[in-house]
Length: 372
Image 1 (tube, rainbow, N blue to C red):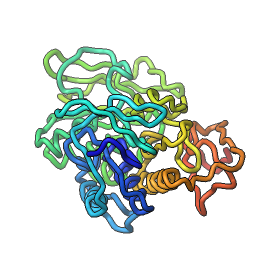
Image 2: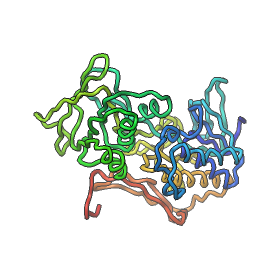
Image 3: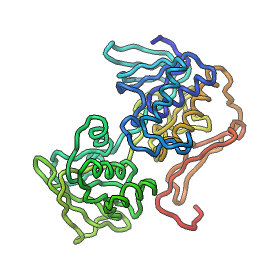
Image 4: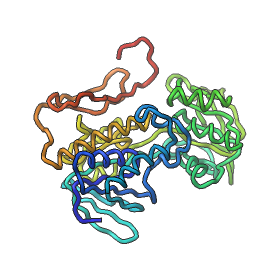
């Protein structure tokens, strides 16, 4: 590891790997990937189910298989990596401070790519009343315990939230010999992909309780039961609809939050709706020479989309380092209204548009035959 690099990538998950590989393929030789875990690949390493790569590779892969394809390219390209290392700060002039068992040191970059991913919302973030027993996990933590560490988190589970990882973990618990009493969602529709509703819930006869919520967790040492009630159109509990379900485990799949503490330190402007950086068509943030991609910008449904977006960030970071980055033209700002909750990228210049620019957006509910 050297004190100076052309491009420093913070995060060695799918976004960071794709961005680094693309920067290398665009002529940048001095690249460093900083990863806080003990291996590259990020969340993909614990996603041992298939369904990855259908769009990008045009074939079906498991999470580790998808990650390994990019890890191989990182190794083949001679890209430097440092593992088990945290970034403690980053400045607007692209000075990156890191810390690991070897101590603390500073690295100066010409361009930085933020690819820190996102974290799960916890029980504290959603304020479920009740006791504080063992047996309450985020879905991602449970996934790691089962798929990586080899520990079964419980025998009878209730899952709160209809995100993809929650439904995938419902299936995993069944496959490991457990029982899933229900998947509970406050919304009137499943938040995850339709294919996961079918493959993970319908195929295993797991009940999906829409417009419901967990209103209490009971148990002293370990979860003993939960109380579930119906909710109205405003997601408020309807009195008199409460029902108790015996279980020993509660998994939370209640949303993801981009990891942007480092972005704030660098002075990067954040979108209050996504909690991620405001980016342009090149995936550059409000700070010149600092780019962002993947779930640190906004939460993606498919890793294939993360890869495409991250390649764009890597390509443009390379252009920036080589002095070929186009800054001409006025920005067009994309605003949301009606049923749209957010849009990304947030702004673009006609003079710098690629042949195809993917614009991501989310809506606040299901719309049929409706123009937003």
